Amino acid sequence: MSRIRLNDLTDDQLDALHDQLDATYRERAHLVALLAALHPSHIGHTDPNAPDWAVVTVETPAGQMTWHIAERDMDLFTRVQPTNRICRGWDGHTTDEKYARMRDLTEAAPSLLSLETVAEQQAEHIKQLTARIATLEHVAAGNRRHVQLIVPELEKAEAAIARVRALPRTPQVQIQIHGIPGQDDYNRGWSSAISAMHTALDEQPTT
Image 1 (cartoon, one colour):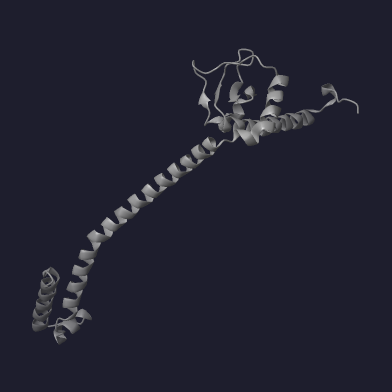
Image 2 (cartoon, one colour):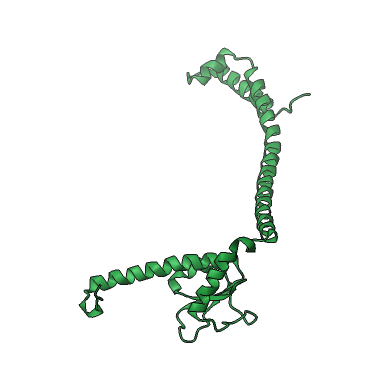
């Protein structure tokens, strides 16, 4: 198969190749981020020969491994601690040595997942569940307090409504309620009924 020379490619074809390259780096970054989440790791701009690229350093039982990470893929490494003075620097491994260590790590992976690691993962899961339960209990307690404050007021209002409904319904009141103009005796009757309603609403329920 003959090689394609860059000079023979159109601008659109070059753009397509760059997109494929970016996608490949993104896919690799996802896998490196997973590896960094499983082992002690740190990330920082520590390579003077590639200042625009961050270097993620992963310390595994099979040995140190490092990768250059593009700025556009840094969002995948927000949980990795930044490189600081106490972090171990590059140990000088080559790319071939890095992937030889990865093969060793892959073959030894089942035995590396110790009971202690499993216990730590379960403890973290329980911690998260406990925090969630505490939040739900706090919300529930607030709702119960709200109900305790409202119920007495609702009972008082219902009792007042019942007392208003028990008031005698005089003809004068019925006429005035329906908007029929009343004479003076009707108006006096309406005022009397209004006073009685206020009294009923203001009364405390008897026990």
